[in-house]
Image (cartoon, rainbow, N blue to C red):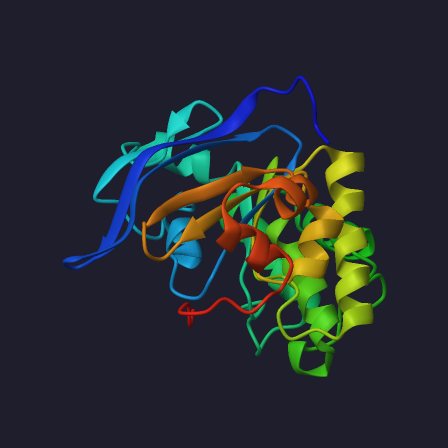
Length: 257
């Protein structure tokens, strides 16, 4: 557990909606530098919506999302581009370009956002692949990779610009238990050795209890956070019975989400 760390992300009074339908309402929390922070909740509670607002894909109805001192909601121009470079994103399906090799997928980020020499870009792409355990796989196409390898390749691409923050959307989705456990260990290794802050949307409880320093749980009915803290402590001692049932994988009468 990260201790004595300052917040690197502050979400303040955030409300997000699709047209006239409010999905999350007046949500506030902080993410500490260097921690693995997980957003939990049932289907339709707004986990993915929250993530998309935090990475700038959607603009919230109101509120602030302060990333390393800059409010991404109100930033514009160069200031906005600078804050975007502080984080990387790994989408649930990897989102690799299928017509490009794995190496080229990573190199593309460097081509778009740096003026490095070609040899340096090649070296960095190879280094990022080695960092996630895919050394020697650079010339493979995404279609030749297993599900776990695609996730690792997507993570390597997200780290191309050496971000201090990584946003991961359902990293364990679709993986078998062994591959999922290996990905969990990679996340922990990167967090602890490189001091990367991870913000992860997940519903895979085995992974959550393995990697998360802290969690927040969103609720579809209240459209807000109903619990937050260390996952093991919430499972054992949270005063909200639904939270305990969720974390213990118990059936909940009347809640079909």
